[in-house]
Amino acid sequence: MLTFSSIELQKQIGDVQRAASRDAVVITSHGKPRNILLSVEEFRRLKEAAGEVVPSDLNTKRAATVRHLPDPLGYDVSDLKAAARRMADDVASGRTRDAVDQE
Image (cartoon, rainbow, N blue to C red):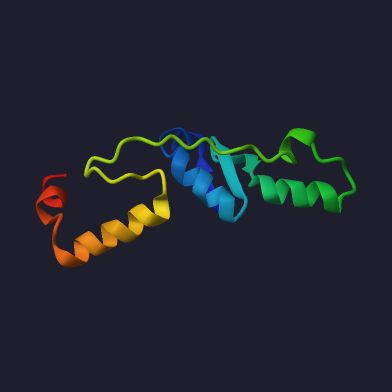
């Protein structure tokens, strides 16, 4: 279990969130433990183990939003598998070396 001060939390929120996704994180204030940060999965597991109701908004799966931005090298990325195969072929043959170096 990792420990972060409240100041570290403010400065390193990404690191703290990644740590909490693996294990509980202790947040301290003035050197004393004040809060525990858990992943949603661990929170859900503890609620279920205690026989408590899991808040309904934690049970819903949210749809991912995918935005297709134009590829700077001109690949049609609407079919990602086909685009990845074409990119791999182009890299292997060296056809796009200049464009990749510029990017």
